[in-house]
Image 1 (tube, rainbow, N blue to C red):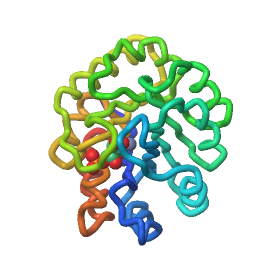
Image 2: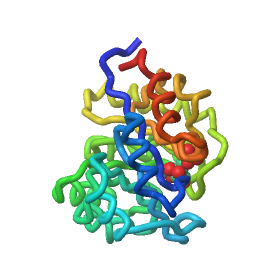
Image 3: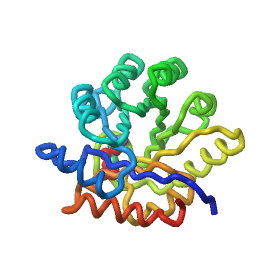
Amino acid sequence: MITNRNIEIAPSILSADFSCLGEQIKAVERGGAGVLHVDVMDGHFVPNITVGLPVVKSLSGFTRLPIDAHLMISEPGRYATQFVSAGAQMVSVHVEADAHLHRTLMTIRDAGAQAGVVLNPATPVSAIEEALQFADYVLVMSVNPGFGGQKFIPEVIDKVKRIRRLIEERQLNVRIEIDGGIDRNNVESVVAAGAEILVAGSAIFGTSDAEAAVRELRNATIQWV
Ligand code: DX5
Ligand code: ZN
């Protein structure tokens, strides 16, 4: 068993009620969320459009949680540092969307944020073998990006294990985040595989009590903390 790991719950506001977003964020803060996950979609890299810079800017002045901007956009290098300026402390870009990944990761770090690299479910671990050393975290998608409320792809657990092994072999200081279909039923197995930041949208905001839902997910991982 791996001990002394800092497991964090990262509520994804994609499934929140935007008419009372502030209240919903306060609820997940009370529940013990560690990070606030903001899904940015451009209708081009993924078949959906969500929120962008003005929302990150406004939330960064509102929440005490670090904002984790997950950029599901084409050519993320064009916008990544603007998200840092808007207040995101973590910015992740998809390996499938960026032909200049090293440069983008470096510009995120230089701007003062943690840089993350994201893999879609069918993207092999080998695609990030080189990028790993330039990243602060790897975001493993456990659904195809674009929508909340999709079914968890269980094969991704093995991928998390392989990434974990790679990180340990190379003694890198890189955390693993997992995103998509995370709920009470799979949270323990993804943590056991090596994930440390757990994104959950519908499992938190799809319930009538977001605060309790975060607390319940946290409690499920307590043996690992
Ligand atoms: C999917 C997004 C996720 C999404 C997760 O493209 O990246 O962050 O909000 O939602 P659930 O937890 O409902 O799968
Ligand atoms: Zn996401």
